[in-house]
Amino acid sequence: MTSAIPPIPPQLPPARVRTRVRVPLHFGDGFQVDAEVATFHELADGQEHLALALGTPGVGGTPLVRLHSECLTGDVFGSARCDCGPQLRESVERIAEHGGYLLYLRQEGRGIGLYNKLDAYALQQNGGLDTYAANAALGLPEDARDYTAAAQMLHTLRAPRIELLSNNPAKAAQLAALGITIARRVPTGVHTSPSNLRYLRTKAQGTPLTLGHGILLQPQGS
Image: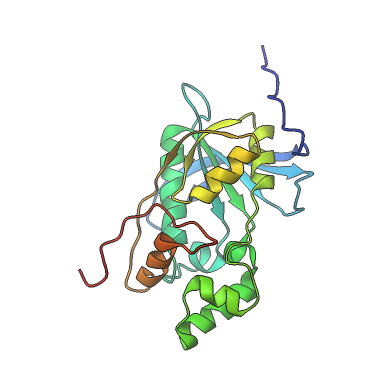
């Protein structure tokens, strides 16, 4: 018997699945896995977010879920300025082993867009600003991401209780406020390189407005 869809919090408009399609994924290191990709109607921000079902979500346990913000430079071109590409690769394999969903969210540059992200890169490169200060210098938020659509997707997928694969406490806090129960937050690996170490230190420290991520790095100079 099909279980009823869990109730959606009154502040959260419902979404509907638009399409489901099987897509074989093949990464550059040879890792392969099949995903069922879902698209949606009525997402709150009107963006074309995707949900990739990997393994067998929810069978024998709570689904493991990663909210991955789109990063064209890191995910597609392998930019070493961030850790987005390696995090995406790690997340797909871990979710496939456990069973769950990767939500691929169209939130380039923490929600400021691709061109603004590259403008911020230029300030970091030429002005010595960190990733948050560069956004502020452009008159943009340190982190403009909103996870309302992600919560809609999870409710529609009948996954109101999840294990969240993330180092970012803000993701867990927003989802919890939108009716998603976080059974536990599972940290991702720390993918360092000479090019992204300053970026990762900035994420770890955070700012008064943006919570630091739960990643452990050796003290500078160690």
